[in-house]
Image 1 (tube, rainbow, N blue to C red):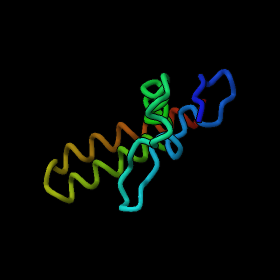
Image 2 (cartoon, helix red, strand yellow; image 1 turned 90 degrees about the horizontal axis):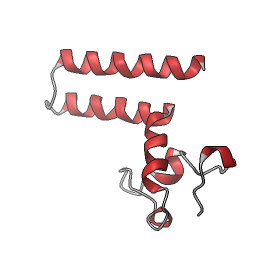
Image 3 (tube, rainbow, N blue to C red; image 1 turned 45 degrees about the horizontal axis):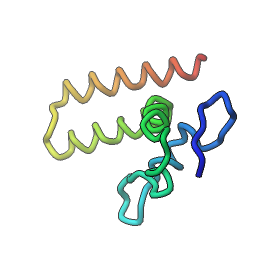
Image 4 (cartoon, rainbow, N blue to C red; image 1 turned 30 degrees about the vertical axis):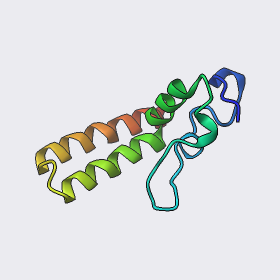
Length: 92
């Protein structure tokens, strides 16, 4: 799979479900076809900055809260920050 920058129109660049799909056990892992790509880091960063990536981070925060790794105030603060970023993306 070729990763190109977003200006080239490649459908895989920055797509969370392609570069960082959910495996059989329910965890996200980097796709094997992406390891040899020279654009992996930039592609993954773009995917995590998009709405899908922000939703993934929101789920991660909820998981950490359920397991007692973060408190209620930190959870609320981080989720509020993520929701603001999502709204900002939708306005663009």
